[in-house]
Length: 374
Length: 262
Image (cartoon, rainbow over all chains, first blue to last red; front, side, top):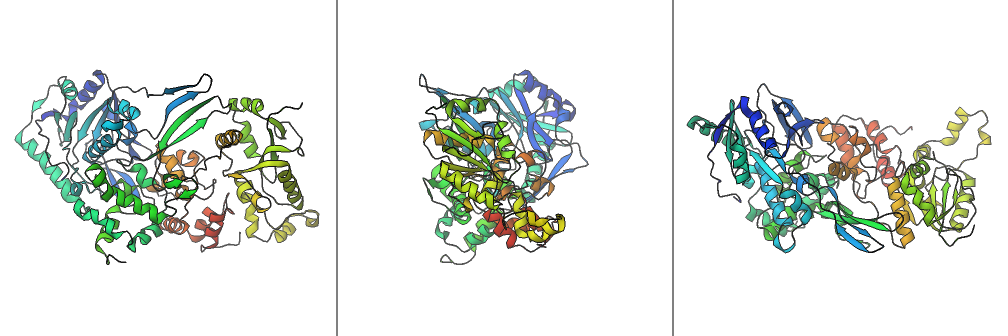
């Protein structure tokens, strides 16, 4: 729904045996290449140069509080959906020094990150939508964040359609997947014998110029569409429509909030893995001699006391009020602030919640169960 | 030599000295310390004048003997500010496990002359006996947190307390969740940050050394641990470990099923 305008694709075909040429083309174009590899039992973005490093022949089991990679019989490189992080850490660093100061003579210096042009291989629709949301937050004209911008401007995005959905995925209901309908530099759709490849920017086109792409056959285009339709059909979860979600504000006293709070650990994992959550905290770290200091920003969470501390007073002093803040802001408040809901259906908050709390089920229960006055 | 620098003391009570060692392990930043304060007492490092009045006392260890009580009261009288550091000083430490057992029976079964051992009935946090101005949790403490707090106190500002869970440290560092990917029970979600997610970063669940997180939903995580295959006693022992007598963990373990014979 949010991504109603379909990006026009005019893909060429790259045989599976030639996929290394795409990677070489990216590296030769001057990018460090981050690709999906298996590390510590999960898909993670790591620097790669060779196709053999990729997560080949693997799928992922993602359920509430549960993530496992499993071998498939196939050769596909992108049969899994995603790991615990999307693009967020690449632009909005989890921990970084923003500026440093010296006492004598008094000086303040911005510390901008030194970032190489970075290509990211295998970005999903949900994460591309999430990046667009983060862009709106961090790059809005009134106060663009120089640290975020420094990293963001150096990204080359290589998107990939999802041919399958994990059990916790619900991007079809938010309109953010499973196919890549967002702006990318290069788009990919994986077929059995190779890849449909298209460019979405001059930078992407420059990389593809290095390849000798064959013309895509009608049958291949049909397979591409069939796969993403199948992936959408596989999805077992869905989020209510934005105009329904806005009614969460009429349900702030619903009894179900307490039921969630009884299970919620207040640990903040959901916000840390959420590709759109943007809250941070800054701290002034003074050197022991008191002569210099640095201002450090790190990911915060609305589940932490720091998020609503006003001096000695905590506005949200318990887990119930924090979960309610997260859910109502993400699904209702964002609509007013950002023009859309803050969820792109990736399902990470469900998978990576240690106790498996399911955002779609909680939203449903609060919207549809019981009366308003409960 | 008299100077107008603030005076600092580091006192030890019932403890393993690990928090003092954590301070000594700081390395280079520690060299700046004598330029800022007169370290009048820090036996582990050399200076040994326990009875001098000071501006700040760092106190390691729990109170577990009648003599400890007298000594901590003296330290309190001699200190403008008293900071308790580490699991022992803030919650009674690992040795507080004896609080859950009959220590006199135990001693009688181990020592030939238990009457020669004079101990209290419990291993107590410093705050049980004297007013404490600041507590820094951890086993051992994160020395950067201690030095940061010292810097703040010397500047006359209140140190900011750590409020996040260990999970936030894992996620910021890109450490993969052991509970979600391996089904390994982990205390991280209910444990206060500060260690830098030391154990999860090494691929295993958190032990809870740093004590209870700011919000503690012990029932929910205990239920999850049981779903992951821990029996009731194993769940209980997750809470009854290094920070066993920290308020939240103590209450949690007392509310759980499981064998409590210690």
